[in-house]
Image 1 (cartoon, helix red, strand yellow):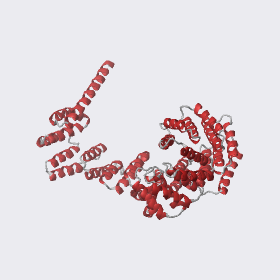
Image 2 (cartoon, one colour; image 1 turned 90 degrees about the vertical axis):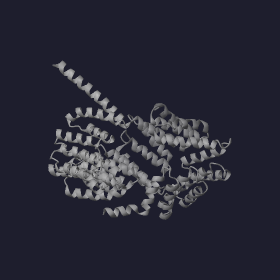
Image 3 (spheres, helix red, strand yellow; image 1 turned 60 degrees about the vertical axis):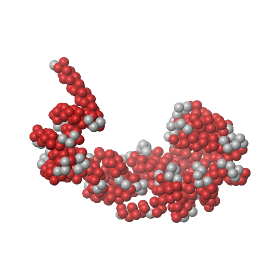
Length: 609
């Protein structure tokens, strides 16, 4: 008995193998226009496949006959197949296709109508006929088939997924949306797939329709959670994070979740610079969850970090704002201590002290405590060492800085954090004027798996190569690197003085646009926005083909929009950027900012109301 089963299995495998080979050969014949050879093979394949009601080879056989212009033979073969299986009305579609091909359009329409009229109340029959119409690009007939199938089966929404796809092909966006929503109601597990389908099918102008229909479904099915979840997703696509956050909080309360949904959305909002919404989400978790919940501590850390980003984002912060945030950090640390679980928050306080409050001794003291915490995570300790190295460099203690960078490099040779340490050491060499060694390191690091490190290393390598090649005298580059170190050390006035002298001495040097750009960034930090704008304009006017031109144009636009409050000039800059610098990394965002300033999104908002 076992031997008999084995022989049966082997025979089946051999049959399938031969069938697969014949199918490929038939397809090859068809592509090479050897239609008779292809037809003979497809017919043989059909004789085997029809036992499982698979008519794919039969349809290919008919296509071969049509290519051979054997129209009568094609009709005879279809009639024969319909006699053998009268329950398969999809053959009427094949017949209609033949009739159309020979110019008998009225007969073809009758065949299509007959197929739909005879449709039985069976899911497989509806699906087969719908697919047959779809295969012939008969979208209207396919839609009618599925709609009739739902009525025959008395199951509204059972074919919504297929109908949505058909309405999309037919260009009927409102009906496509409606069917996707019905499909979601029929099978909530599809939500992620449906979101992906909608994202690929909709333009920004279609989202108001999706929003309006989703509200209707929420009202019709108030007990569901998937429509409110979809609503939150829609708001995220429109970057309306505050409305998305309201939905996320409501769902979190309704289903007594642990804040994960809210936390994820807060991260998205923070990454897109909507700091207020992100902070709102983090604070919700802190208020609704206890300290032992899995997201409480991370929400606290993220809340504090996002508050710092919000304060310092455009250099317009006050010392009072920084001190208030410092007090919030210290209150948390005094209450919870310095330990492995709070080490990240302590490290971020050190950054606040060093970079913004300019209290380097306090930053160094905090990080030294972090590094010496018993049982601390190796990566947190390594990052603390890198930051401490930065703060030593800011203090002028170069040897201490390179020692810490080298420790991390040695401990994490194959890791990204080790590459980061290598990059910082190379940058330190660049500051010190050892350009050839620095460039050699940057050339290695430009293949880093970290896009940020790779891009920065590539930029610096090209920068050194371009400017060292101008002449044998490295004085200009050395002075420029010293100015960059002064900026790193927060000695902004000294850096400006150095750049002014450098710009006057080397007014015709290839570094001139870089000097102007660095000066402009410094004046932004010092909140002298008028002077910064003037320097950006000088780059745009005199160096339009240089690498800094698009950066200058983008930064100038942001100044007009945010600090100088001149939206018309901001729009002009954004428009010039995405029209004249199409390859710029800022082009996409410039187009978006231009549309927002022009009021495009206000119009969409009104349409949604």
